[in-house]
Amino acid sequence: MKTYAIGVLMALFLFPTLPAFSAPGEEELTPAQQEAVRKAVQDYLENRGSGEGGMTQVDSPGTAATPPTPLTPTSGKRLQDLGASRGASQKYNSTMQGSGNLIYARPFVSSPKAIVGGYMDIEYFNRTNQGNSYFDQHRLVPFIYGDISDRVKFAAEIEFEHGTNDIKVEFASIDYLIQEPINLRAGILLLPLGKFNLLHDAPLRDLTERPLVTQRIIPSTLHQPGIGTYGTFYPTTLSKLDYEVYFISGFTNAFGGNGNPNANSNITVTNGIRSARSDNTGFDNNNGKAVVGRLAFSPLLGVELGGSGFFGSYDPQSKRPLAIWALDWTFQRGPFELIGESAWAYIQQNNLSQTGAPNGQPRRMQGYYVQMNYHFLPEWLSNLAPSFFKQEVSTFTAVARWEQMNLGQDLNSNTEAGKLGEWERLTLGLNFRPTEDTVFKTDFQYTPVGRNGNQRIHDTAFVASWATYF
Image (cartoon, rainbow, N blue to C red; front, side, top):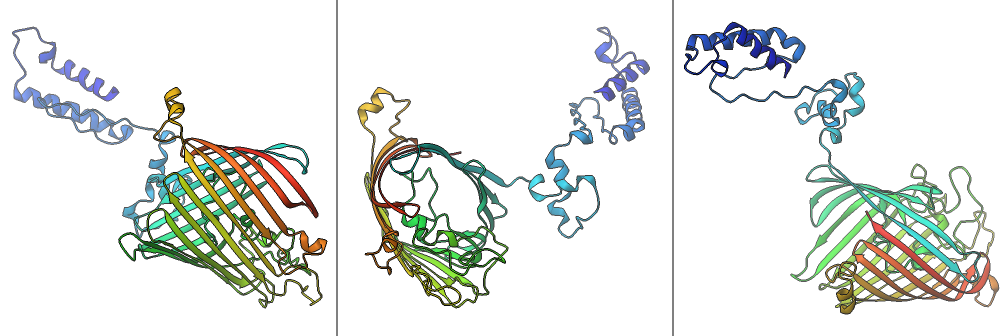
């Protein structure tokens, strides 16, 4: 703006008869005078160019002036400008040249591609025979998704549990898309062992607590580093076949952590396979690798049957295999939905210590759950408060779930040790979703067969929670 003002004043000084400032009836500038004005202003701007970021082009008289581009000092540059040195035009150029701006030399700075979202929940538990009632801000889970290119995708989930008591990367994967029937994936992977482990988010679930079988036999959230492939086929116009197959590290904490192996495995009648997991991706307790996969067939919309399996060594010598099989099902018709999952585990020689001494630990486990959901929204409620109960997005869900689990199937059920792994539970629930992404849940649990620590109990509980995506 300063440049334009000085140029105009200079022109007025040289040629006081400019039309805009002349009295009516006075002559217009001749073409020679107009050219002299243009040249004088241009010369002035050229002399100022080195201090103003270069020469500014002046429009010829009679044309509309082009507004000047605002000049931004270095300290005020946008992140996109700072990261622009790493551009597509520099495909083969070095990025190792030193500069204080190198911290911004990332492709996502000059061209943002990531999407951040996630979910959180808050839970309340009041159990009759398990201590005081309490609130628990159980999970705060940010998701990061990156659309790197038309073929390369990135996805990650970082979980904060119980405040800051437990922080971990739940999954982080890079996908390379080839065709719908076959794609590649590598990273920290959600294991396709049962369906629940893949769809475990609190806002998705209609009850607060996860099923028992998915806590102890397929201990969700189950994730391990590895690589593999996934895809979808369409056998007919109505049917769909999905698959996932990965090679992974396996249960690396089955005999304790890095450099501190236990004599007996962490797979027990009280905790199942849960303690054999590890969040340490930089350690493997053996040279063997595991394989996991799931095949899901949907013959028509609203029906899906899935089968999955895991196989891998869990001991330091890679001589003891651990196998898990699972079946899952989903049937939906109108407002009714029937879902469930059943799993079996075989842990070879888990009844022996590493030295071969008997330890009384289980080798076989089995568990299942069956859940019925009924979705509804009374019309009178929508009429009474349409802004709170919207027919197009709001819904209530009545839920009933029955589940059984035995973490010591091969142990003598007539002994107290053999009974510790037995569980039975009935859960009745009612939840409300103002939108599909947010849910308020209330549950009543009746556990005729359960345990608290190493003590068998008969228990009831009232459980409530709020959960939402963001």
